Length: 132
Ligand code: ATP
Ligand code: MG
Image (cartoon, rainbow, N blue to C red; front, side, top):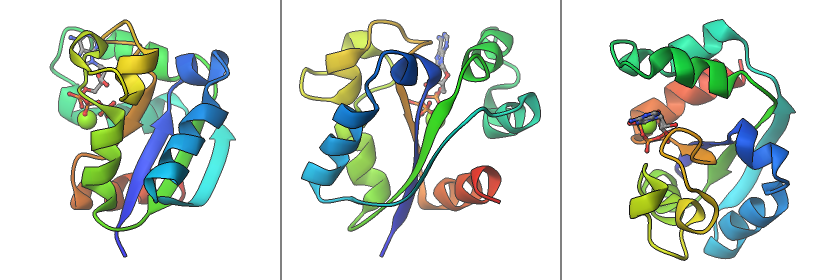
């Protein structure tokens, strides 16, 4: 079945949210099939966010995502990409409804706790990038 790449960002790890967030994926019915706590280097960060290279916040984003360990995960299940995005919520926590991960735990559009793949193709690219 479908796989999605999900990553708890350094702010989420630092704040001790790994357990709560993993629990939400499990309760949703998505299976955790691989996970690793690790620092990502600048090269992986710049590749992962390559589509945002032209944005004013790109340098800040790379600094943030490499500032501490992330918790990288592969989750698997029915429509894993769409279902993980739906429990994560919109990019900006200010617009994310309560009950979503960003709605419950985030305040800031930059430090927004978690990443989830936005398509099946990107999920497979991200899994190769982070777990090669
Ligand atoms: P992600 O890819 O992390 O799951 P997303 O798909 O919801 O998030 P993207 O448009 O891919 O959103 O942006 C990637 C990340 O860049 C966001 O999650 C956030 O950390 C950061 N970001 C997005 N917009 C801004 C902004 N206006 N200012 C600062 N950082 C931003
Ligand atoms: Mg994205």
